[in-house]
Length: 157
Image 1: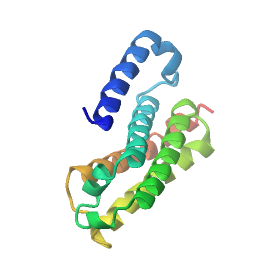
Image 2 (image 1 turned 30 degrees about the horizontal axis):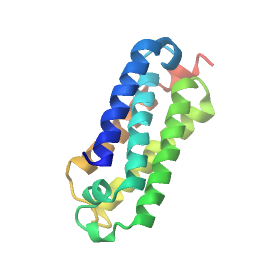
Image 3 (image 1 turned 120 degrees about the vertical axis):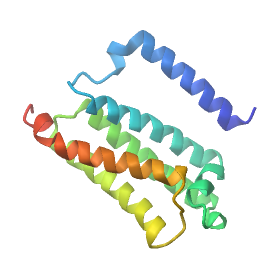
């Protein structure tokens, strides 16, 4: 079994078991689904960041028009950005009523959306496939959701 697959399998099971037995300890306490969504997106970002350090395979699928341009340095830089995004979004999940972190989180989605859109439409390194569609959907849905819920979460500060 390939290291990435076994890591993904193990982490999925261990995360599920941990959440099942300790849900009150790890889930955000703020009302609504947005904090849980932020934590879910952050968790997926951690996996994506780790895979950028482990292999070029998935990153090459993202930049499918120019996979030869994906190199270890670029993948690690992308992994570092993705881990930074994960931290921002996880922090937002637990501090959803803090204006500064809420705003930074929205901006992080805007940066991600801008990156993938520019790679798709301007630089033409990506093509509209699953690996690019997914972050575009997550970023746009998250931005819109956060903007629509802005007053709801920040009025409780």
